[in-house]
Every structure is written in structure tokens, then in C-alpha cells.
Image 1 (tube, helix red, strand yellow):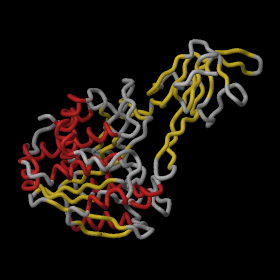
Image 2: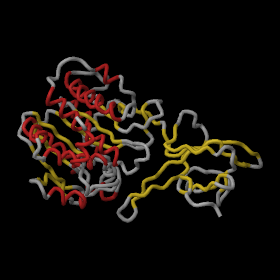
Image 3: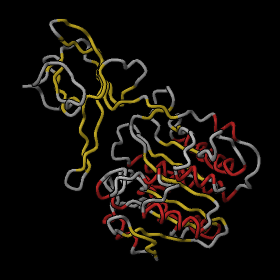
Image 4: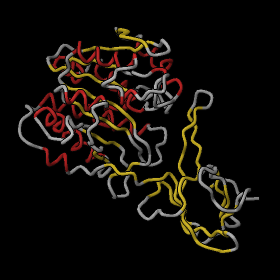
Length: 384
């Protein structure tokens, strides 16, 4: 199957970039019969879309964290496929019933924050259910009684695939259901779907798939649903090289969704593939957005060569997310990689302040007499 061609065909072109809110998805939802199943803290609607008549029931939700929008884009790409008149769409609708919550945290989406309007992380509220959004998700879960749950998230650019030097473009987790992190029949079902998705992704983005940490936290939704005996899969949409808008990553999330559904459609869930799951390298915090090497500084009259790093901060500005590079680490970078690496080759660091980099300072500076760094990157303009 040409997965990339399928995505190109069904990609929802009206959704682009990192800032995705209700105003972006509501015009799309008018095409379908949707239900408002609750409201956010600020009274925004939480929509449910159900489709299909098949016996296998799958619950998916995205933007539980408001600033994690990549999987929402991929989910709408997947919805377009589900509703297509082609053979594949019809087959999926006949074999599965899908219940989709495409934006669980609309207040956080609007503010571009992880938390909801009460500054609560909904993915740590599974037990207390102190927030209306948390209660909506649990009510839908209990009413729908899914056979599988897909918990759709983004992860930061800091994550790599172990120590390979590759970004973790997609990561998965079959959450633990107890402190011992035992693997029972329920968790094994989730693991098998992950293994099937990983096999497909390895053909497209080899060594760029990670396995998320499975430390048990019953307050997390995935851990709770796994504890309640429903196989649950955590998706983490991460960084692909130079893809800060996550448009390439959305494609691989779409492909993972499709590959996992095909596996459930074509395979009786038997056998043991736990070892294949455990062989997926674990996510590790090993990346900065920029690493600058061999930079000469003068500190208290002493010249020395240092390495330092900068990281983008995502800032909501006039309904768009901008990326502001700031100095994040000085020295002690031996075990880290950069998505962009700039070798100063001994050129002297200069800036408009103290003449040496400082933590949280904007990454605007000079390297020698010919290189100007603006917002982390080498400027296209010649220095004057």
C-alpha cells in the first residue's frame, strides 16, 4: 500500500501549522452529524463524532493538551478517509465503530497552553475528574465501552530515539496498568497494535520511532483506562527534520492510524510480539534545536572555547505560533544533539550586551566578523 499517496489524497488542506482551535475545526464538523457531549470550563463545546457500524469499537481523542495540535490535523485527515466512498473507507466503516473527540481541551487550544482554563493538566486528572473536560471524556468512555482507546498527543523537539541522534518523530506507549508495569492480556493487545504500526513506519522513517516511558501514574488517562481493562495506545507526534509546523509528522501519524486499523482488521490478536515492542528504542531527552560548537568567548579576561545550545519557545502571537530561540544550555553538551549544529571553528562570540551567552537570552549574536545569528539561525543577510 502506498501510504503516502493515501495521505496526500485525504489530507485536510484547511488545517495547517501549530495553532488549531475550534474556529478551525467547526466548519469541518458541519459536514457530519456530530454531537456536543459537554462543555469546557469557559463554556466551549466539546464535540463527538461517531461513524461506522462494525463490531470493534475504537475511541480516539486529541488535544487533551491544548498546544498539541498535530494529531488533531492527522485525525481530520483520517476522518476524510473514513468518510470516503472508496473501498477502504467502506471496509473500515463496516468493521469498526469509531467515536472521535477531535478537541477535548478547546480552552487550552485557544490559549495555546497545555492545561485547561483552570490551569489543570487533564492528563493528570483521570482519578479526581475535577474538570468538566475530564468528566466528559470519562462519560464518553463509559457510554461507548470501547475495545481500544487511542490517546493522541504531541511531544517536544527535545526527544530523540535513544542515543541514535535521530529525532523521535513518532513515539508510542502501551501504558502500564500497575506499579509493577506488568504485561497482561489487555496491555498485550495494545502492544501488538504498536508493533504493527512500527513495522510500517520503519519502512518510511527508519530509526525515528520511539517508545515512551511507561512509569505508572494512575492519574494519567491512559494508565487509568488500561487499568480498567481497555487496551490503550498513547501516540506522541514529535519532530521531523526541519518540520516545526509538524506537517510531515502529521502524515506519519495518519499512516500509523491507518496501519493500526488495518492490523486490527486483518489479524486475529494471537501470539506474542512483546519482545518486538520492547526492542523499540526508548525516548530520551537528547536534543536542542540549535547547538553551537567551538565558540570563542572572553570571560573575565580569559579566552576559552565553549559549546552552547538554544531552544525554541513557542509563543502565541496574533493567532499564530511563533518560535523564539533562547539560550538554553552552556557547556555539558557531551550527550546531546542539535537539530541544527553550527560550528564556529573558533570564531569569537559577540552580542549587544555582555559579550558572552547567558541562559534565557535571545539567540541573537555574532560569530566572528562574518556570521550573524538571528533567532538561532544563520542570517541570510550579510553583516554590515
